[in-house]
Image 1 (cartoon, helix red, strand yellow):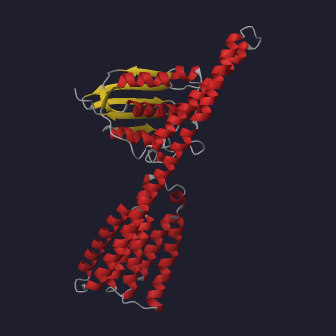
Image 2 (image 1 turned 120 degrees about the horizontal axis):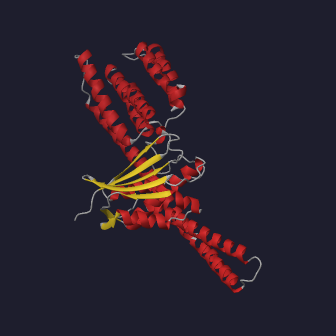
Image 3 (image 1 turned 120 degrees about the vertical axis):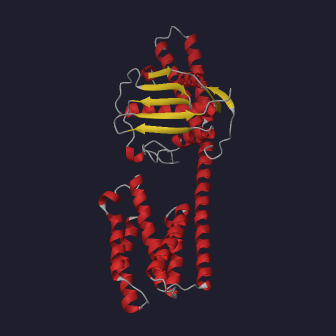
Length: 392
């Protein structure tokens, strides 16, 4: 975006001089060129260019691109009576616009920009409009090619995502074999210890065996998570009735805590139980993902895992049921809240792969519900699953 802003800021006056002094066109307006150059310069503002992930920044960029490309170029095309130079320019503009932004935004922007510039031209220069069927065919062909390229790029990105997820699932599954071996070694070690109770280091060896088994369980949990994430794009629809209270209690009991203090910090509050339709295995994975994130957030906040630092609440109202997972951790930067459910977006770039919350959202949506988050930096986070009640 910064490079685009720089090119547009410098290119507007340069092309204004070319079309007005060197290769003269019927219409050119240096004041309008200067205005477009200043508008492009907004993409270079320090506060804007520092973080393009903010929703307000993205909206501003979308607006600037819409004015700079479809609106301005369509206006210049009409004012120049569809000259050969501007016919080629507007066709090139369409292809570039579709590559710079999402194909849906580009389609809406191209149509709205062309219509608005046509309406302004018809209002300001009512006698200047001239229909040219040849230009219409060429522009329609260019627009179709740009649309196909945009759709092709979107499909390519989706295929890349699917292949990446499949590879992750295969790699996670292959880790089962060495973990099974490690588990057998742990079992054999504990059996030998029981036979040699008089050994001076029997207690220490017993503790090491238990730690090995705990590590194996934790790694198997991570493998289950990765395999579930690998199915992100192909989640089937389930209609099995699930009791919210039972689901939460079983998931909390089965979670592979790294210490007893972690387990003791989790508090479950059942206000009103309810049933909803979905996959018990998938929703258990959703809760485990949310618990894992909450415990990581508590660790990042140097928490002592006080009782109730992680709270899971089950409640039910007239509009459906709710399962809320709240923590007193570091929270989420408000600027990132609009992106945390996107695949491969992670606020923890050192260890996060950015798929856990995307998986959670897909599972909740497949059950007809939605997931929401409220958070702020250093004030913790609350993730709420809102689910429709199962038919009686």
